[in-house]
Image 1 (cartoon, rainbow, N blue to C red):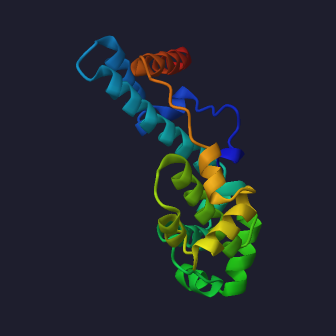
Image 2: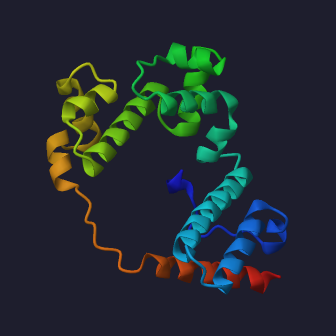
Image 3: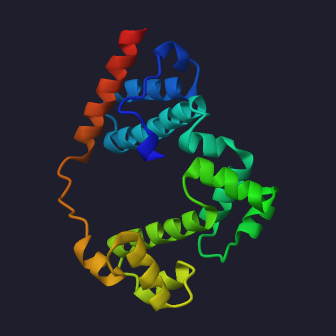
Length: 205
């Protein structure tokens, strides 16, 4: 979905009045007016919620192609929900189709057209993506990650992971640890973005 996003999402101010987006912007505006306890945390939280509502607004407009079209297709959305809800389950196309209340061939066709890969290929990709996140961000043992990924053995997991990322899981973990510089002033960047958003909205009014 992130790959489908444009560089800029434009929501005209008149369209956001009396909506959650407008309400959040009003809250941001009032938060900037006074430095009250919890100011930095409030700004970051409101910006997170604002971003989600902006993405929802964009998705609601894009119903013909890409991820938005997939999420608006009841059968494909149901299959995605099943996969994301239980990625370690041994799903088959028939089981996903039954969950989505559609024929196996119908789901396979619609899923591949909208997502860009067949259901089981997507399931494998999603499992390996979750595994990569675990390898990068935690010290969870490989045996546990392999089990949670729905693989029959650690060897099967290593093979599937290398096919997806080009590296064995252990080597991926060693070379992809995130750098974590100290956040000296976490509220400052949030406040900068908040003021920019507020100014943009006020210029539309």
